[in-house]
Length: 152
Image (cartoon, rainbow, N blue to C red):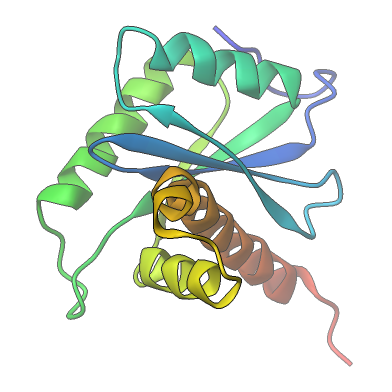
């Protein structure tokens, strides 16, 4: 189990986009200002949890934000249930706090961004989940900065 709390030198936040085939990962910088795509992992419980724990340990992650896919009207469907199950399972593997965050449109924005950047279709399939994870994590980071920003 990965330790959490004061004295653990953990400063980064890990963003996770849970897909049925791949898990997209993104990580914040130490100042929690910028999210960057990290990698994708096969959504295969035989190897995924070990690899995910290693990424969290190597990057000194102190919090995990998992995308919660909602429908346009805000309701939750099967994909949201999968994300909630994933979050609960991750909670059994780590003491690091796990939070769910609305991820509506992140995959669409990620695909649009990759197309505009000229990334070929085959490569887009490989990286889109990590880019979507970065978008949802950036949204979470921005919301925290707005909440904690001093009034002018």
